[in-house]
Amino acid sequence: MSFLTAILSPDDEGIVSAASLLRASALVAIPTETVYGLAADATSKRAVAGVFAAKGRPGFNPLICHYADAAAAAAHVAFSPLAERLAVSFWPGPLTLVLPRRQGCPVHALAGAGLPTLAVRVPAHPVARALLAACPFPLAAPSANRSGGVSPTTTAHVLADLDGRIAAVLDGGSCAVGLESTVVDVSGNIPRLLRPGGIPAEAIEACIGVLARGHTPGAAPVSPGLLASHYAPVLPLRMDTCRARADEALLAFGAALPAALVFNLSPSGDLAEASSRLFAGLRWLDTEGPARGLRAIAAMPIPDVGLGAAINDRLRRASAGSVG
Ligand code: TXA
Ligand code: MG
Image 1 (cartoon, rainbow, N blue to C red):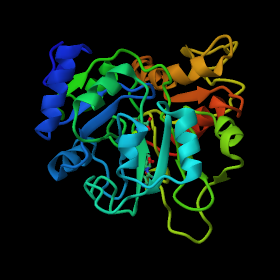
Image 2: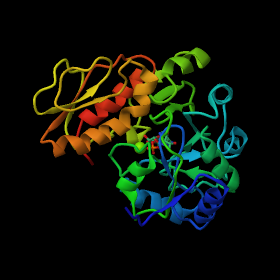
Image 3: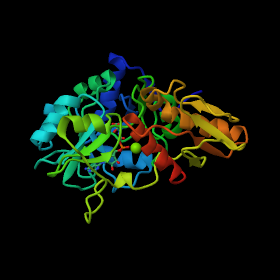
Image 4: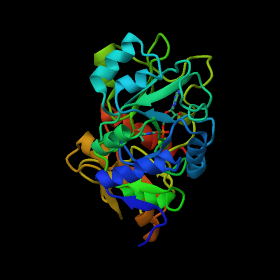
């Protein structure tokens, strides 16, 4: 199969090519330990506008900025002692912190959707880290899928959504965590969990105490991307099933129920394995199901603890609507 988007290898040459494309405000999908990100020079209006256009993402939904290390992030946002503690404990890794922008922060306002805060993250993936070290600017990078769809965890997923819409993809294999980063708003007095993700909320609470959840009562929604139906496969999805119907494909966890088509997230019931396979499983069932005349996906129950809470969050959103 040939592609319009260049596939770069994750070696020195690929990283140099990716960095020079990014310097020219082009878009490059990059591997992170969570999911593939659609990276752009966060300081370039043209590059950031390109990200919104390539994804079909509404401009009110802000992007996460990726940095080589915490010191680089601290030059652009103001860390509280609490935020510092989280950064020391979980960076590099699948945690995003929402913090107040510093005056003179060079990240383009479009990337932050005009908000006074900025979401920042230091990823752990060695290829992402090498690329960040090679770029003299932070990388704004949402998940590298069409807006509303299922996040990509392989280069093939990225190309299925964005071939011809972006300059290149840096091929780093499969993403180990497989779920997006946990987003915590530490811009105010009370830390708030905005999105469960690759670091379990329990681990964050063990570090800084209880997190508030959901939106501040009475305040405007702070994380617009969390409102819409998201992560939606094409087939309708229903959760917590104890029996798959004849026209349903099964997303299994543990010992699988009988079904016409099964993708088992983890036969042994391991939540980390299930997380790493979730998006690939949804994409696979979405292609194979209709090919076999199936009309829906039924998902078996997943324990709502640790990474299971993030898996259930994604399944709830997937079941809330169709592709947007
Ligand atoms: O693992 C990840 O987080 C991946 C990789 C590529 O880093 N990125 C990712 O980005 O999932 P995205 O754009 O698909 O999701 C970012 C979420 C959105 O729900 C957005 O609304 C929220 O973070 N967000 C970004 N900036 C924010 C801000 N200033 N305040 C509140 N929420 C924000
Ligand atoms: Mg996304």
